[in-house]
Amino acid sequence: MFLRATAALLGLLAGASAGPMETSGLLSDAARLFASGPGMDSRLGLAPAPVEDTANFRFYSELTAPFRVTSLPDIPFPVGELYSGNLPISASDPSRTLFFVFQPRVGEPVDEITIWLNGGPGCSSLEGFFHENGRFVWPDGATASRINEYSWTNATNMLWVEQPVGTGYSTGTPRAKSQDDIAADFLSFFRTFTRTFPSTTTYKIYLTGESYAGRYVPYIGSAFLAAGLPLAGALIYDPTIGAFDITQEQIPAAPFLRANVGPMRLSPSALEDVDKLHQTCGYDKYMDRYLSFPPPGPQPPAARNMRCDVFSRAQRVARQANSCFNVYDVSERCPTPRSTMKGQGAYFARADVKRALHAPPNTKWSLCSTRRVFSGFGGPQREGDLSPDPIAGALPRVVDGTRRVLVANGDYDMIIMSNGTLLALQNMTWGGALGFQERPRARILGEGGKELGVQHQERGLMWSQGYATGHMGPGMNPALSWRHLMWVLGRAETL
Ligand SMILES: *[C@@H]1O[C@H](CO)[C@@H](O)[C@H](O)[C@H]1NC(C)=O
Ligand SMILES: *[C@@H]1O[C@H](CO)[C@@H](O)[C@H](O)[C@H]1NC(C)=O
Ligand SMILES: *[C@@H]1O[C@H](CO)[C@@H](O)[C@H](O)[C@H]1NC(C)=O
Image (cartoon, rainbow, N blue to C red):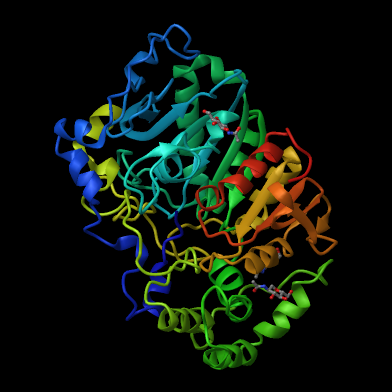
């Protein structure tokens, strides 16, 4: 998760409920049992995991020992070599810290570090760690945690970071006004990290993330390259790389409904209004013209028009057909699964979990920050984030600098739509040309010849469109995301 509904969007959506992310009272029965103390171990048959010997740990040292995690509440298997805690962004100001979780590869060591960032802005990267690509996950609706068969720690050394300041267990007062501010803080934090884990200093670096991290990753990547750090690739899911409130939400919304009549159980007649607005606003012509390969030229700057709010209208239609409509995965039906990450019983808000992870006991953890992580106002999407959209420079710099960037989108994601992300890429110049020159059409074939999606690469940029996949790619389609990772790490040349 997540792309947070922007202030503007919330305005547009007035009358809608706070949305799936703000549901409260989600303490599951299992979590309640777990929280109630040692008695439940025998009840659920869970033996506490044995604490491992550090002899085979690659990163254990006097410096890292204070960060070592020996076990986690309600995780009934050995956690392996695992470190977490807060590190200052700059030694001169210990009040500003970011929280990290570092887990080395399980198996043969590799000299690389893969950073994962969730979006928001202000959403915790522990979403990735605990719901998406970590070694153990506790999916919504599940009564217990389980081993993730597609954990990215099977392949690489993983570093999840809660950033920017204002997010999760991080400490300090938010003062970022742009992605450049955020990237400068991150670079500085990363230097603190590599000083603490000195053997990582020369490792190849991969930057990954999802949603609003579609803005973090390109800017942090550009800053890493400018500082001469060995950035080797990047991977972003359902990313906010363009004028996302228009290009990735408004313009593709009507065709999205048409394409998903089945999974969303819509009645085609309910779509007529939405289609009409799509045409009146010229979005049909826009898509015909610019979602072409090669594109005819740059797109005009995004024009915001309150009368052309196709996206809100499309969501109303979706909600009428499905009261449990989830904009992050339109195939979801009632009942909405209980979450281990939200509400009062949220795993990372628990005192015992904070203790185990060396997190500050007094931080009020929430999946997505309740305060703003930008200190200013305005910017292209009015988030208070003044940086230009990544397609205008930061993302092409990372593609040209690494020639190993993967942009993925899930077809069941309605908050950032596949066609919208593709439309954004068709307005980006990298490797000396504008957009993809050919329409993506190569299939991604999974086990047993199952079609997982469409792949396409040109000039160091790989595009992946995942079928039947929602916004949180690694959590919602772990097998496909494993292939993404293999490509980004340079261990495969196609998906
Ligand atoms: C990851 O490792 C686990 C064992 O820890 C194994 O069961 C699983 O098959 C591995 N997955 C992949 C994709 O290699
Ligand atoms: C994406 O756009 C194409 C036209 O280029 C259209 O045929 C397709 O139905 C759209 N898909 C979705 C999911 O909106
Ligand atoms: C497309 O790119 C041009 C040139 O970089 C830029 O001026 C314009 O705002 C972009 N339009 C959209 C919709 O992203």
